[in-house]
Image (cartoon, rainbow, N blue to C red):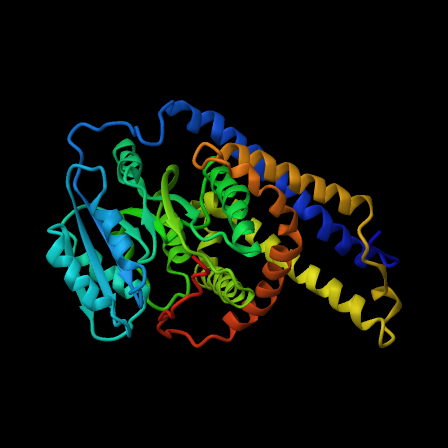
Length: 420
């Protein structure tokens, strides 16, 4: 089994193995409690959301950059929402393809659609700010330009704002559309067994690290209070999630609000996406870390500590592998010598725990997607592929974030949307 002689190095090795073991049970307990305490309480089918008296009007916001291949379907799903009163505002953020022309055509076809054209690519945050300022309504539901929003999602989400005046945002349940490759199939399980379960648990434990930018709704009053979206942050969704919660606004998770999205299905595309996520998390910690030492921010302490531990874990894992490799070519100090990295009983324990987490979370999420358990086999590969990429992108992304020029606008490029 993985082992070393020096107590300090042995301690790092133990941390590398036991951290994911502990967090898996942490997420499982929270996810199961959320399922029993909240999800089972509605007792309603996905296509039968609770009705509201005097439904408040909603503005649906769609930032678009080079979405010519996808935006027709996105808008068609939005205008087909099962909701009494809403408008759709699409922002063409200086696209270099035919996105602008398509949006203009759709505006003539759909009365509910308004289109804003930005002369050049200003970034998703700027596009969202423009749409929010043009919106006529208090509640703003944002989706990406390649996403397909379930027709009942708006009603499932808006009900949360009516339940609590301190609810500043509600994030929905992203589902993977493209699943033709190994990476695509693994991501189906990831969004259910990892991301979905973590959001459930974080909702139970108090705060949500990220309100997924691909499907999230906001109270405009809350956005106005914090100054809307910052245009110099790589991940505007992580940034605005932290600013809202640091200002005592609550973020909720609504698993019934489904939104079908496209994800990378190549290693290059996946690397770029996860590197952006890693850098975005580090940016938020650097900018708002000083606020976390205030007593009024104590509700954020658990997810702050979890983030720091996950970063430390990534550096430990990469360091262990690096030392183990170089000691085969050069002499290393005795206290750094690692006898073996082959997993023994600890590795088997982690694998079994991960499989337990996968089966529990897929069972919970099977309410929202039929035949989801068939992806269980593909999740066997998750620790090897995604933990490796997550660790590597964290080790690369955090130092790059520290060296980033302050105030630089974060524009976007067309992501890898996989094979679909």
